[in-house]
Length: 174
Image (cartoon, rainbow, N blue to C red; front, top):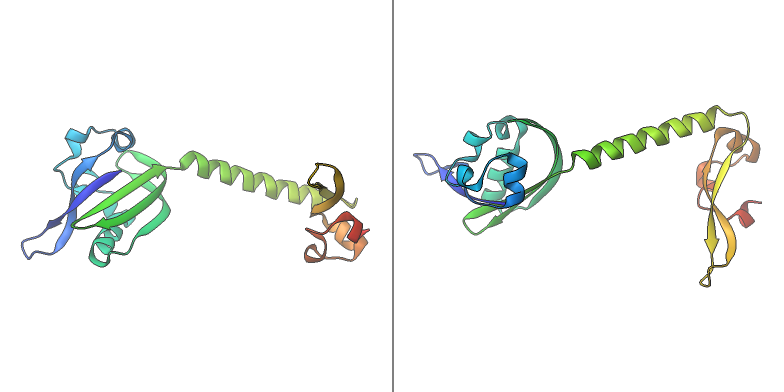
């Protein structure tokens, strides 16, 4: 979490921001102490904020008061990875929070790739394959199954598409 006040050019226009407060997590992520950041301009310490669009987003939030939260890939200033960024205006300052979500993003990408590979394997099988999750009552007793996956051979055999099958109970399908 960082707090930044506007930096104005000779015409009084806000063109950048100066650090006024930095927490320990920001120090660790940036690799700089608070003392090295406070009083320094955002774009001078981290020139990559200009081409990445982060400075423009900060300027927009300061001008409009519109809060922003987004994830983006940052590859500059000694950091390469995904950041979850939040920008809010607080009186005559902006609060900029950012979290390194690179590991989470990489895990999501690996899971998506694994799911895609699994779906390819399932669809290449000539055997009808379906997967079901157990449905239990309030006491925990098994009462049914709900379809979560079917492959192309299953669609062809049953003559039912995914919208007609996925999420349906086994009793209804069979």
